[in-house]
Length: 359
Image (cartoon, rainbow, N blue to C red; front, side, top):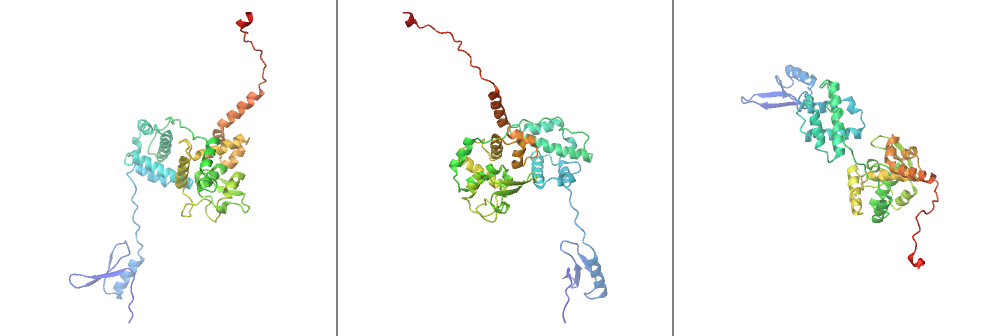
């Protein structure tokens, strides 16, 4: 005679020698089943236990009401946060979590944040203006969200000025030549360098570049910028095609890691930082400066701001103009000087008599 096994039913023998049966789903509560298996009372209790929906464990809310921990939890679950682009969400989450952790603000009440505290947070980062400004930006976002929740009636970050930041150095032609002299065509470093310089894209856009993004004739590449999701269709410059001609082609990443996978953004950044150092270039030469160099060279070639933006993907022409400001100033100065008619002035310096001639 075959035996039927009932799901989630187990048994044990008590100290009196009686066999007791119970019903229990994994992680759920244990329900005693009366009688013997197969009996009407047993089967009725079993059916009721099966039909009973397991209770979802209550999610433990982060932090106390009114605290920064709770504010972070609510902000990350909000529409304001979820409508941001995925890369921006990751960057905001990391930055806000890190700021709250470093400043030991998690358990503190949001309403207790004062202007003096905000200024003190920035003062700790005065030697890193971009870090200070980013901390101020993230606090402003959180405080604005707290205002919407009714947790505060004022904004302690208002009228607190950002620190002046230095701009990324734009690579000069001499620095570009020095890198190319150190890393010959055919090396991984030179191929990455050429992709960065001749496409004018960010590290986050060059890292995932794939041969599948290249057109069938090999002369164009499609790019979807990670930061803005801007879609670009770029012609590959002849100098870049010359570099790629000496680089193996495949199906995946144009420049893969040693394991055949695309570089991560951080991994590519570190790779280029090592290559720049090995080329003996100054610390001011960072990878992002190649994007600025690309814009500079386009400006020097006479491209308009709209033409440059069509390659770099900038949505704001003001940002393009900031990248190319030095070029514009130099070209305007040269144009202005060329319009100034030269004057052939007489030599007004008095002649100094030669004593020997008098003699």
